[in-house]
Length: 340
Image 1 (cartoon, rainbow, N blue to C red):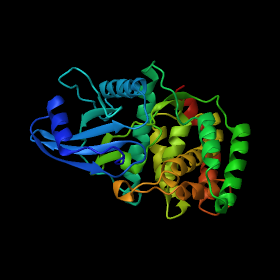
Image 2 (image 1 turned 90 degrees about the horizontal axis):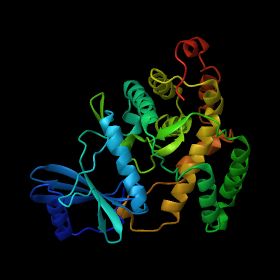
Image 3 (image 1 turned 180 degrees about the vertical axis):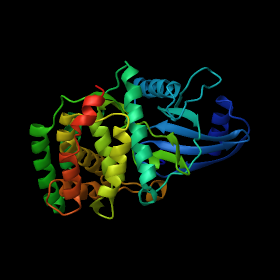
């Protein structure tokens, strides 16, 4: 979410009319996020979320919306696209695709404000999403799979200045390592792909909304959990076991991890850190713009995670790795085998 495509008042009024949202009151650009443009639109009927897809094709926009419709029918607290008066869920807008959903009320908590109860709820919710996704039979390509991230890295690598040569050395080495050690024979299904704290809304301790399904696709479930760990269990430059444990407890209360998933967990953490390092280099470091229109996201935040995961820097991984090494509960597994 950022402001890449400008929207003037006349256009905002027309959108309110075309989607039957009620009389226009105001609109505001939203600076958070990486890829798409978002506005908050207020009318006399309430608040609405305008999304302008900056990178997806029409087919990809339809795929994302169809997934949201399915998840909503299954009880997932996700956004629901609104149909326009023309009977369409998106309109073409300056060569891109614009959609509207009702604004999900609730609070986006910063990572440091998440309590163990919040983290357990998040783990439970992610597992629920994975189980719900088993029934979704339509395919959605993974735009951030390993081969695509490697291809993206090779493109951005050509543009990196010489003073980042040590970073390039680490990333080159990490690509080679993951090419040899990532396991693709793991349970797959629908993944959110971006479960950061600013994509979740709470009212008190109750989770009331999950937003930003931009990266949702069919992928490895353990990768999705690893991304949540990287996003939610890393604080003040360290991985925190007191955050990892409630997140995993919540997840395994619905979907116990298999032994191969536990074994692959460290490498999936590394790939997740690589993925966000590379995409942030592309979307922020190399994409210069007025930072008044977005919140800058530094790729070094995830590069630092990668250094810790590679054991090149201290940062709390000892306790996390021990928990992973001993996390597989054979007795629990016998009672409730993990979902495929």
